[in-house]
Length: 367
RNA sequence: UGACCCAUGGUGUAAUGGUAACACUCCGGUUUUUGGUACCGUCAUUCAAGGUUCGAGUCCUUGUGGGUCAA
Image (cartoon, rainbow, N blue to C red; front, side, top):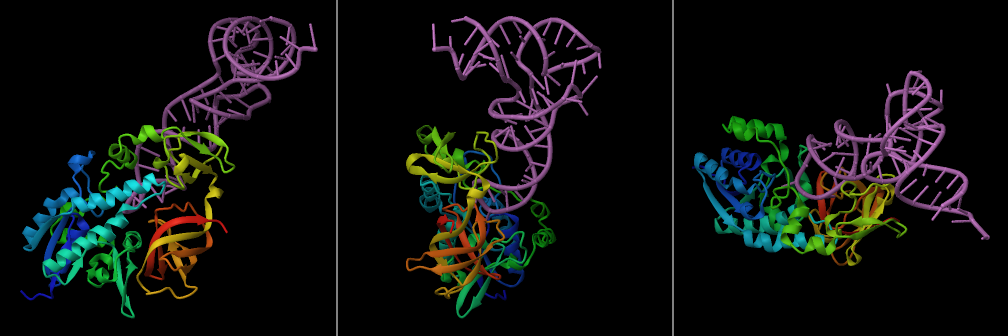
């Protein structure tokens, strides 16, 4: 077999990772498929469903493709690490009054670490996934670039990857559109797979109800935090809520109480189980502090660098100035107002198509 | 228990005697590898009983339930 090298492909059994494997195989790589078992649906309740990145029940689908296409396939059980890290952090963050993004954590700390280790053990030069993103290189540094298909661009959730990981990662779908990928799947003979609908939820919350997940995880929580107070921006009590962990900054729906106008969660105060509600204008911010920063494109940020900063997954980004502080924090000054800056969510900095880096939002302010 | 005011969806309000409307909540959908946002949509209303009128949320009477003034 004329091989360009051995490559480890993370396969969920879904359309994207399956097509990824087949593209690379066609390009002459020797494929080693790997599927990570991160969570048991059997113990988490809810229906079985596919998800974008971690369709855990599709191990068999992945294996079948490997058999049909004639490459190796391994299953890695990382339930323990996944639980200790991603799920515990998920719960802890909500208890701290923040809004976690488990997919980012999982990519950064679980998925890629496990993949790299396996790649080494299996003698693979590269690892590949079905993410819609690209990788760029400049002055010896590697960085994520947004996908050609902006509708599917997943660069936002990949800001945490280290240089070591990036150096050895490939995203064959980064310059393709979703319709093209579907067509390819059909061309490869996987018609059913090519028509699989997209679906979405946190992979370990299959019923898409994170509040219910928290309650199942912490049986005493609901009673303990029920009956907290809503206050307005003047501090006046205007109602009661079901407990601060069940709300997120910027939230409008689900407040359970009618006010004269739309009200939004403006601030969460875990210490007193208080939620500050404000009008839409009260969500406006133009500065924020980002911690746990991972820089990709630069070793240290050029002074006064401007970036298009995203504060949530589906965000077109806001022009801003970045100022790197000593302790791996970045102070962001937005050049336009942003609304609903939620602590715990990821901030990702873009320069054109390139991801400068990212971090976790710690707090925000106005002027 | 003297006088006066009020009563409309789950909530807050609107409707010269002429098809009961708006906002918020709830629920559903679209979008989305997290949360959330945004957008679309559904359900649902005249306190009760009489009366006047071609026609009553609106006017009259009584009842009920609130509120205000009652040395």
